[in-house]
Image (tube, rainbow, N blue to C red; front, side, top):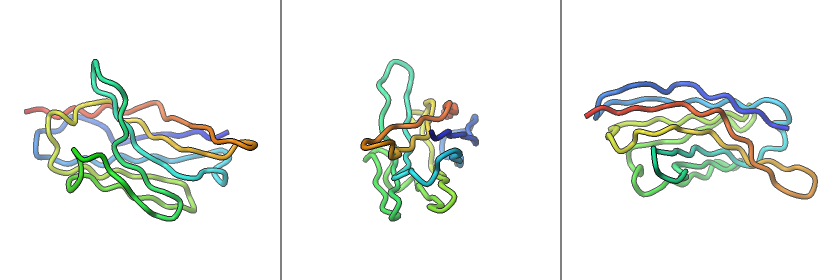
Length: 119
């Protein structure tokens, strides 16, 4: 089993920056990749950024050029640096890890951290 703990959310003005951090514990050796998702009120959860064990990254179009995901593959951490924040970035942000379990893959989720961007 894998457990995830997030930190770093808060209230920031538009144009400001925040850094979210995620640390994994438990069977971290089984983790393949990590990601950050977000869910705004009344909307579906969406993938924001992901990083593979090899360091490859991908982003949703709306955050490209503003957000950067980074991680420590040995320690299984994933940080999300968010710059030039906009009110539409307001959401609960969740850390995610996909890990091997038996012959399949499972998802682990953090508890979520609220990011509020004021205009």
